[in-house]
Structures are given as C-alpha cells and as structure tokens.
Amino acid sequence: MRDDLQGLEISQDELQKLTNLPVNEDLLIITNPLKILTKIYIEKIKSSEGATVVFIGFSTFVFVYILFDIIIKLFVKWVTIPSWILLIILSFWVGGLTQTILYLIWKTRNKIVKNNMTKSLQILLNEVNRYNTVIRVIDINDQIEEAGNPEVLIKEREGVIEALKLTKSDLVRALKTERILRENKSFILSNTELFVNNLATLTAMQVTEQATEHGRLLNEALQIALDVQHEMKRLQTQR
Image (cartoon, rainbow, N blue to C red; front, side, top):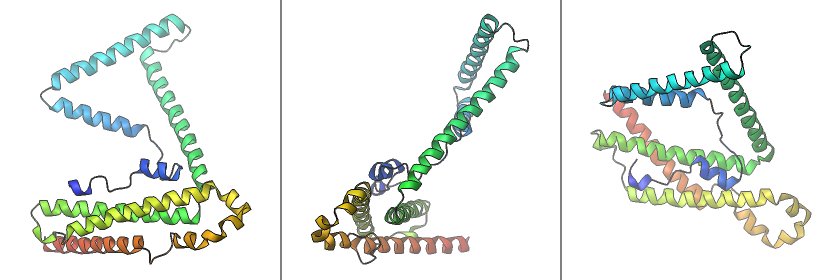
C-alpha cells in the first residue's frame, strides 16, 4: 500500500473504539493460528536455517512429551493407556473446550451489538464498509499500475486522497455523534424540551442525508472505484 493510503482505512479496532461496541467481530477459530504457525515453520525449514528449526521443533516436542509422561506417572498412576494416546486425547479435549469458550464469548458480544444496534449505526457501518472498499480498490489499482499497466493511473490522485481524508473525518465525527446520542438516549427522551433549540443542528447531522459533504465526497471516491473496476475488466479482456 502506498504511503498516501496508509492510515486512511478505518480499522476494526478503531471502529470498535468509536462505537464502544464489538462490531464486525469474527469468530476466532483456533485452527487458524495453528495453520499460520505451521506455514511459518515450513517456510523456516525451507530456508538456510532449516536444520536448526527442525532440531528445535523436535527437541521441544520430545521435551513436552517426556514432561507430560512424567506427570502422568507421578500423579495419575491409575491411567493404563499409553501416555502418547492420552496426550492426543487431552489435546483434542482442550482444543474443543477452548473453541466452545471462544464461541460463547463471540455469541455474547454479538448479542451486545444486536441489542445496541440502531438504524443510524447500521447505516454508518455500511458507509464505513463502502469507504474501506474504495481504499482497497485503489490499492489494488496501484498494484496493477506498478505491475506495468500505466493506463490505469488514477488522475488527480491528490484530490482523491484529500477527498478520502475528509470522508474519514466526517465518518469519525458521525460515529462519535451516534455513540453520544445512543448512550444518552434515555436522558434525551426524558428531557426532550432541552434539545428543542438544537433540533436544526441534530437534523443537519442525520447520517442518511445524501446531500452532505460526506455523501458528496464518498460518491466521488466511489466513482473512482467504479472507474478502476472498469479498467481492471478491460485489462482482463485484453489478456
């Protein structure tokens, strides 16, 4: 990703801080980290450090097995099955228990989001997804350009980046505003008369208003994304 795109994307952590909700949270599958570690281990084996990595990995496995075997023989003497079979069974049991706990945590956090979801927040989350998609499309376009396709060059790039910065700023402001209104909903409803004078201001901040600066800038950025997509399809047909 080019330097001018760095930091423009609204990350999940940033979004959760802005909304004070665990939004867009995926269920953690414990096998995924294991797959990543396995991939890294295989890559290390293929490198010049292969022999050392294999030795360390094998030594660690043997050490863990011997330690487990000693613990079983000292504290669980009544177990008659071989310790290596017990180790496999225990590994699957711990893995299953961990995955169940992770699922229950994810389910609970999803319920929190569902109970606090408002129409305005849902609209904003969709807008954030569209905004992040535009940045990803521009990044892909940059990679295509760097691969030797200068015809996909984005014209007036500085203006597009500036529009994205303003769009992000407006989205952040809207998310902060929505959070304040949502977290103080009961007080606002019970003290409606205090907010009558600010009705015009609150109305102007409605996230569904398409004529806002945010809407205009986002539409401009989306138009760039559509142009990029069209150019990518054209390149594919040429090949």
